[in-house]
Figure: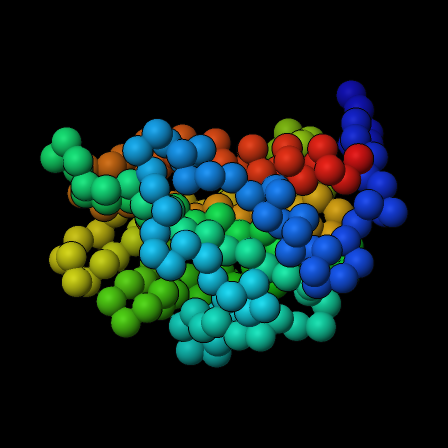
Length: 215
């Protein structure tokens, strides 16, 4: 049984400035069709890479300026339109590049703590996720040997304006100073298994892009 990763990241390839980090994040990102052939860009497609999502003390998500330890955070939004009697599916990918591994590791630790603190979280005025359960898998734990660290999160997504609840999935992984996360919010007619498949494909592809650039 291997006792260490079969990949070695090269620190000299880690982005050192915000401009380098943003270029890196764009190269690692994938097109909406990686979620599925009928996914397309939402408008706006990208959030400000100088800000990222922060869960406040009231368990409400806010966009705030990046902390000193982060160089960039590129969030991109994709959507599968309602079709075939099923509702729309929203997908979000985020590539965050930190100044060092410790800062990226702290992001992962904070993420695990947030579910314990806020099992119900407000995404917007009409949206929330609840019943959240998360599982952390550092390299070598639970068979996870693809990344330095990994977190899976599941729960229920509720959209009050649409009057419905559906499965919710989110995953984040760390490779060196880079974290990658993918969120999938479902709606009518989409099963948890279907959404899990939709989530995994872009996650695996972005992480492969990150790894191939940093080794």
